[in-house]
Length: 266
Image 1: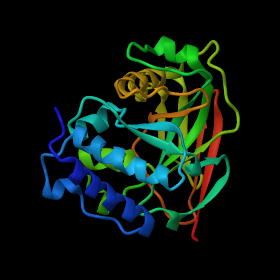
Image 2: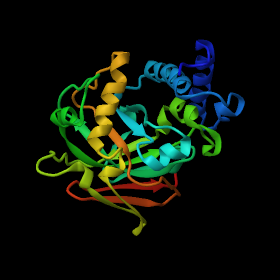
Image 3: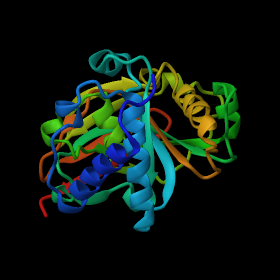
């Protein structure tokens, strides 16, 4: 299905998201007034927003995938993930302390990150190809955020909003995929020491490396190659969790180790 909005409408919608990021004031969902907007419309808006942010000096260092679980795809009525860029300014290390007011409506997710050692491209990329191009995996946490008021989003809204990106934290240890199956990586997720979710690598499209291959194939018609050194966030292994000031989130991954983020009140 092709986009139904004009290029000028996409540009205007992107300006709304750009302003919301700058001011911290969320906006109404685009689908409130144009309920028929779909994924292609969302990407048309996203393209303009990315251009605006790159013009401001943002640097794309990877990509994040969303809607990689069957449950989330069913919720939004789609049969494939979505994606958005990861900007270098939003990447943090294990133990980072981030102020809650840096975001509008933050939620936390635990994910497996993939670090590429080689360029990767479609259109015929397979999980085996993705594995061959992979330097290793990292434990990661993602703060997802929405510039759409009250998270009242449909597919086009979250796609336009860079797949609801916020920030990520990556462990310092990159673990080569040697002798183990990423699908079987178990994860325990805690908030302030209390277990609130568990998951496994297979929650992300059945295989974290399958998400990387899907991304390479999806970007190929746009002429985009995933460059060596990129980080690919392969999708949440559980339902997103609300964030409050003072919260300490930790995810412990089999083989990959732990990752922690502290949320400061200011």
